[in-house]
Length: 175
Image 1 (tube, rainbow, N blue to C red):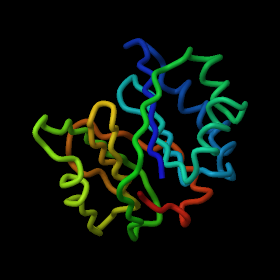
Image 2: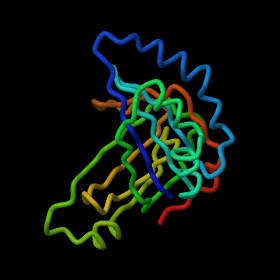
Image 3: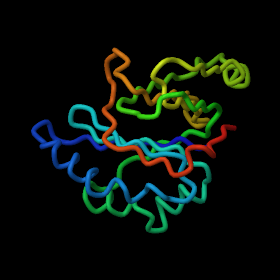
């Protein structure tokens, strides 16, 4: 599993209905994409920030480099920084739908042993959880925790899910 996200920050006066329409008309294009566990099409304020969980690096490469869809982002918004985290944990929750997403990124303390940190990661089922994924970037030693939820989790910085493509959701396994 590989978690991946890019954020496209749009001007404060940008009409987010343009993004909503883009997702409404194009979001289904990845509903059967090989190697993709899921893609959550996310917005918050004036930010478009899709989050992906890939089952294979080949699927991720096909999307980014081989004409599998990223070329539309390049054409419309330019080339964003694409963050990615090798996966260490995944949990499929009981909720059938995902309307909101929460992401937490934590940098490991310099003295923290990453082996101990990863060994201590637990994901637990909770009401309204669609799925949860955790990954670690070994370049920056940041841990990302990403949750898709049926209801708003009541915290700040939550994304709205406009569409969820989940062609290989059942096949996701973590590190």
